[in-house]
Length: 348
Ligand SMILES: Cc1cc2nc3c(=O)[nH]c(=O)nc-3n(C[C@H](O)[C@H](O)[C@H](O)COP(=O)(O)OP(=O)(O)OC[C@H]3O[C@@H](n4cnc5c(N)ncnc54)[C@H](O)[C@@H]3O)c2cc1C
Image 1 (cartoon, rainbow, N blue to C red):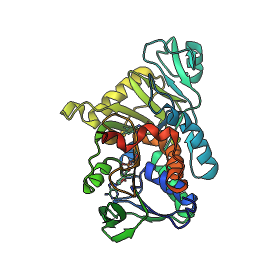
Image 2 (image 1 turned 60 degrees about the horizontal axis):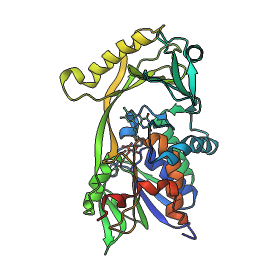
Image 3 (image 1 turned 135 degrees about the horizontal axis):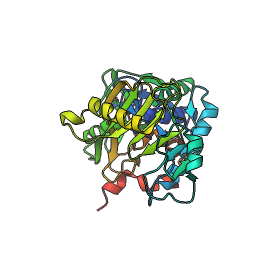
Image 4 (image 1 turned 180 degrees about the vertical axis):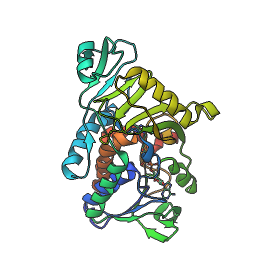
């Protein structure tokens, strides 16, 4: 697109992914409407552990995206003063010998995390990684988008699409029609319901995972610790945050029961804990494609619809926001998004 000014783009969904897209599109001069069924960051973004994780064990089809995730957040921090990130580094161990890159010894582990009761002999420490408050970050991105002229409509579900032949030319919302040159589907687990309305079926599952926030503690955890017993970090306000696997809907596996079990596990791992009282324990639904890879790009069946749905959406929001906005407004196809195209589900 030679002149993005005046290009009308509707972004559906004000989670962290939609907020980042709205920010990057508005910054490039598009006329952006960010349309949200509920409130800013009221979807899975509200229950994210929000680890800015740049590494992945084994072969990684999105290695290029993941590899750029951290530097793109540093770029965003220079542009959005309200964007706070805890660049603490992440310490991981699971009993298997870590690769030589980023390997730290027991003595180094204890320097990083002096409160660990059972430090392993070796762990992986990725100093560049960090975490953020995903709700606050989403608000910062939306505020940045609005500062560049984006319009925000909350409490405004998208109910359908306006089409001319095979071209989508707008959306029908609870408040009326909004015309658009491009409609971006950043609706998380709601994305498949939207494509269904266009008679296009995308295999996106709502994958449950448990988020726990415990009442604030004195400073105990300095990095982000991931081991077989716990995945834990400490917020700027002192709250301990944890993410746990979802184990099904039996009574003993409800989020509040898992929060109590996880508290015991954390107590077993860390010295100096005051009573760990859960403040929030809930199940969040992560939008994950059938093959686990993000779905990013234009739908092949209808013109004017760009899909942007992924896990891990918090880690990737900054890089994907920039690359996808360049694709939409500058006709610059991003090589790093090559494996993420929706068309892979329709070949043959
Ligand atoms: C326990 C847990 C831990 C996690 N840990 C991490 C982590 O460490 N790192 C990481 O990167 N990711 C993590 N994730 C995943 C991450 O939270 C998600 O990938 C990310 O938040 C997805 O953001 P989103 O904007 O795509 O979705 P959402 O936040 O769900 O936003 C989509 C929005 O679209 C809106 N919407 C839907 N349909 C419509 C419609 N028809 N009209 C208008 N609006 C609509 C919804 O209301 C919602 O607000 C975790 C998730 C969980 C549950």
